[in-house]
Length: 319
Image (cartoon, rainbow, N blue to C red; front, side):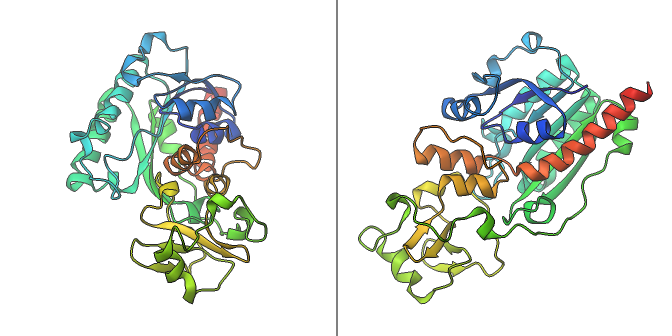
């Protein structure tokens, strides 16, 4: 009952969480060749770099659980919120296609919080109705990484869990809040110099550097808000985004004795709860920022996956 097929696998954040909980990914797929390269650097299996529309359900190996962090840009408040009008929004139905044909015991989905409210709730209703029509008993909840994953990042996401077995669904529960003991300094290096390319110089970023002159706190994060800088007094990182490396809106900044800089890709992966030994391959920093921002909070999902693992394995042992 522990075999996993991973769609929209990206860099494998959900896979790490599920494997830590006792599952085993046996097939992974993503259309992004750079994400696949990062996945392949960290897993024994190789991901299939292919459009999910070309993945035949009949060609997949036998599996018990389907996991997917399907594209969220179509529903995100940071995007245009077109939902199913956006081609990325329709990719949910590729998941439904495979679920309908193969009927794994469990499905796990992750997406942005705004999915719940998009189009006055109609989008989410379609998703829930589709899963129920296929035969799944669905549970869902919005969880914040700083409350449920012991990660100093303000990142709310919707997590959806479906079971074919109604008894399993009735036994399932989402994790409860836990204390936030991980500090920013545990995941961000405030003390040592990093590569020069991460620092903001006056010559290139005069607006940002000028706006930062009034601040001097070297153990928190600041946010560039296009026209001004805001100190993050909550000691949390704002939600990481895919454009972290392009100087876009809401970019986190740190002040150190070496200067003002943005986060490194490794620090972004740390804020998502990836293991310290997670390998970042030799690809552009822009791609690494995109991968970190598009990924998931590993520690939140691991807690959910452990609850799933316990329920389905206890049920299997009682048969």
